[in-house]
Image 1 (cartoon, rainbow, N blue to C red):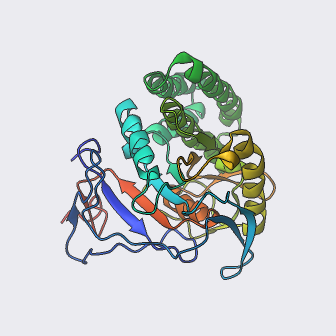
Image 2: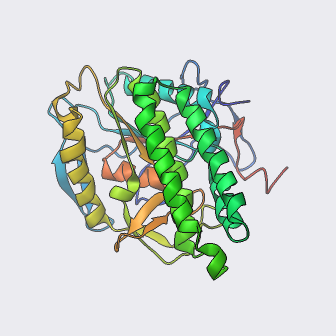
Image 3: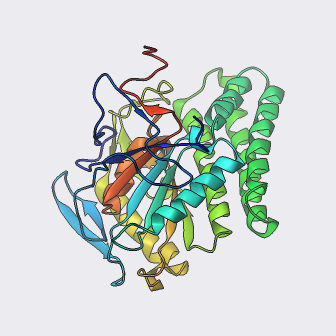
Length: 350
């Protein structure tokens, strides 16, 4: 079943933020659910798991158990943030971006508790990370092939973007994407000379997929008359890592990556106090409308300001990190699959 027909939803408990800090309810070791949520009507058909209740204010962590308030949400905000994560398969074309955008607006309207401040963590457009890896790999042997591969990647993203919003919204974003393309070429030109790919180069280049994806979804949301903004996680999420490279696709190998909570929380607070204030988020009547914020998954920076990633399939980790930063009451992982499996069907076909 495709995303446009049905979508699986796993709602999470929040403990210490890690990739594995959620528990699926009602899934046995030998069974799987079939699409518990229709994306068209957004009505859950399974028991939902609620996060540990917290006040709707942004929190910082000095340790895994000590929390300190950094900023307070407006007095009209009576409900905590909710975080939704979408992988590349859920963002594979323009229609899916629209579907995801409409779903976020619907989720922001809340349930019985009223309007809900909503954050979306997004992966790169489906297949984009592999295209950008191809750019880097081609640059080792033939720069002309690398330029052609990059052109394919950029044209695909821009084509999708232009189907979602009018030129007054898309033109500045297209300019950003094409300028990023120039930066990518500058990064990869030296690879043929050194005959290797330093991990920082690969992580920098592939991370642009998430940056483009977040701007693309945000463009659609701008057409829907909702308060919205997008955030490049590299501006706020500071990590230390003992891992190099991207990791194996589908491996979710984030064990060697740890957020630096004090610095990350401070930067998140600064972003809220500047960018979000300029967007008018501080002045909203949260009983009537709430913001929908789109954040790049996967990407981060080191304490020294070097671009890095949470490794392949690390956007789930991003979701739990930002959920903790925002004192979220719920995390929902949306998957474009016909059921919630107990194992990766590519590895365990039976």
